[in-house]
Length: 142
Length: 142
DNA sequence: CTATCTAGTTGTATGGTCGAACCATGGCGG
DNA sequence: CCGCCATGGTTCGACCATACAACTAGATAG
Image (tube, rainbow over all chains, first blue to last red; front, side):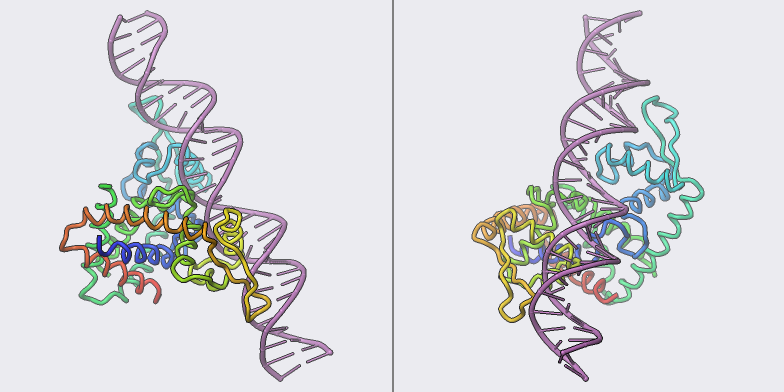
C-alpha cells in the first residue's frame, strides 16, 4: 500500500523526537518514571481501580502491574485495599499525596503539550488530534 | 490551550496501543529489540554512518549508542571500521547479514502498517501522515 | 608543545517488560 | 459437599534500555 513507508518513518521519528525511549522520565521532563506516570493518570482520572483493570488499560502483564503498583505505594502515592466483592482482587487507589503528584504531572504535561500545540499551525490542530485518534483505533483493530 | 487534554490522552493511548512498552520486540511483532530495529533502519537507509551521527539520529547518548552497536556486531549484523578522516571515530556499517535482517524487518513493518492503514478510512490517510509529521516537527521545536 | 575539545568505551545505577512458578479465592459440575 | 479448573496477584529470573561519570586516545587551537 502506498504511504506505508512514509508512515513508518513518520512514526519512528515521532517516537524518538518525543523522547519515548527514556524510561526514567516523562516526555514532559518530569522526574517520574514513565510507566508510573501512565498509571497515575488513569488512577487520577477514574479513581480506584482493580489492579487487573489497571493492567488492562496500561496493556501490561499482571506481574508488571503488580510491581508498578508496589512502586507507587513505596512512593506514598497509592495504596492497596482488598476488593469488596472478590477476595482475590485488590483495589488500587491514590493517596492524597498521589493525587497531588498526579496534578503536578498533569500540569507539566499540559504545559508541554500547550507549547507543542503552539507550534502546530492553527488550522491543523483539530486534524492532528483526529489523526492520532484514528491511528490508535486502527492499531487497536489489527 | 483547548485541546491539550485531548492531545495528551490521544498520545498516551497511541503509545500504549502501539506496544512501545515492550523493549524486546518491535511493535510489528519481530523478535528484535526495538532500539536495534531503529538503528538497523537508519543504517539500511543511509549506509555507513559515524557512530556519533547514529547517536544523534536515534537521540541516544554516545555510551548507549556504543553498546547498541556492539550488540549489532555480536549478532553479525554490523561492523565497525575506523573512520577514514578521523582517527578517533568509527564507521558503522551493516554486513550482508545485517542488510538481510533489515529487509526482513522492513517487510514485517510494511505488513503491519499496511494492515493499520487498511483500517484508516481512505480519505483520512493523507491527513494522518501529515498530522504525524506536523506534530513531530512541533515537538522538535520545543 | 600544551591545553582543550571531541569520539568512543566501560562501569554503575535505574527503570522497564515478560513468562513461569506458585498461592489463594471463586465458580461449577457431579 | 467436594474435587477441578479458572482468575487475580505475587515473586523470581532473564533480558532490554537508558543516562551519567570516569577514562583513553586522537584532533585542534594558541
